[in-house]
Length: 79
Image (tube, rainbow, N blue to C red; front, side, top):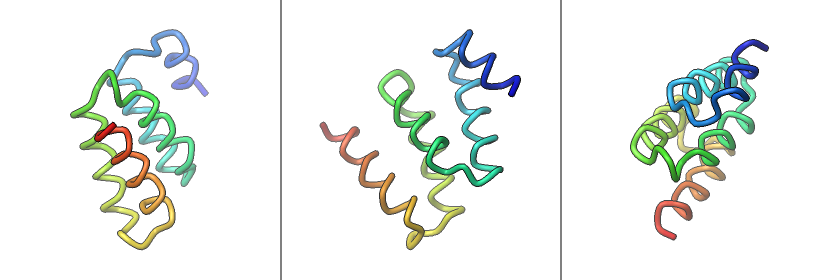
């Protein structure tokens, strides 16, 4: 996938990170989507948090990915 190749060349490009996470989300690859965001949280806290909260809203509070990744996000935020 072109986006993944671009991200490998520019791993710190927040716009590319968000674009790739949107792509993963759109194909319901929620695990790669959330892991990519979490991995990049320390460098782009506000943008990553906003994006993850958007995804949680779409998935709903009872979705397993929302539950697991909201917990992981909290752990990173408050560590």
